[in-house]
Image (tube, rainbow, N blue to C red; front, side, top):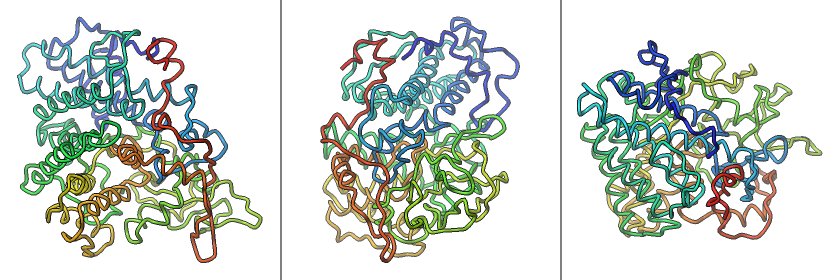
Length: 535
């Protein structure tokens, strides 16, 4: 971490825009940014302020892709532009990231800022006077969760990392092994599981009938995915950890079934990322909530191609092979733009090009992050009105459909097939198909069930990398499938996207595979400060 990350007065973040849907009932009377660490936690108000500061840091860290995105472009669902100013993204798409990549520093910093804010609570909250033990427990639980989340991000992006448990920065901190980092993650999550309630009772932690802050169900779901990652590459702990993953996922599923949790699938996949359910989505176990007036994120324009009429940054686009293999139906229709409007003001199939070719990027376009220019309205892809760069869509970290997929995959990878796992997977696929297709059955082999769960999860979250716990790239990472995709991208064959029409990826991939490509290098600027990062 760079020197300016040392936050002597960590609560300076509390004076900026609030992250919990811009709730204004905290931090309006005292200039908390001027308080010292030693003078804080003197009242319930201070405890609330420390939590609000943590969520503000979390919201900032997840609010734009140069902060929250890392190796998501290593996934086979998503690519980027071959030129323009997209080098920081393109290097990840090419599995060839340099240590002076301009985005690495901010991505590394943002995780450590969250860790600092969490450590401030973890190390000091218990001395707050005249506060109930339950309030202290819940505050500590939320802080432990976000520290675990941040270290999971770090260990899956960089592998071995220094571990900071205090508020001071140790620039000589040794690297902890991957297993040691995961042990800390699980330890934090177990504390969070014990302390986070199933349902919060008041704002700003709950609103519109849903949890805004980290809940017990969200923690259990996170643990399920962490166990799956530990079962896979690089720790390869195998069946025992897939069993643990299935157990935690099942606890979430059972809690939703028996009313302990309110979570349920929305009826139609098109509703999942819609503005209509932006602030009251019962499928979201954990999200980061924004308000364009105070805590806007920068999401809407990232997935629009540079030559689209509505304006766009061209940061990301869909990969063609993944689009081709994506099952037809309402889910696919809601994942990609049905047609794209180019500068000529006309609607075209995404594969449209002139002869000779003139478009720099010809690729499917994801629609998950699109927002209407008119606040609160459904986005209309036929409307040429330029969009705002600032958005207020909830950033979804975990959804119930993901837990269903993890459960089925974990059951299969532990060598079993159960009626319950098949039912959960059919729930996901039936909604995707828009009918009771019930294509999965108990006649499947465990491997078939596992791969079906893996694939359904990929289709459920295709192209969605905004702070999600489990992007397609993370799935491929734990299953050691980067190498296979690297070789495919090197070959870059033309793919028939419509009768007689062939297209291929715009970004070139080259070189020889080695496992160092699985991780990002440590940022050069930080390696100067900590010699242990020079490896």
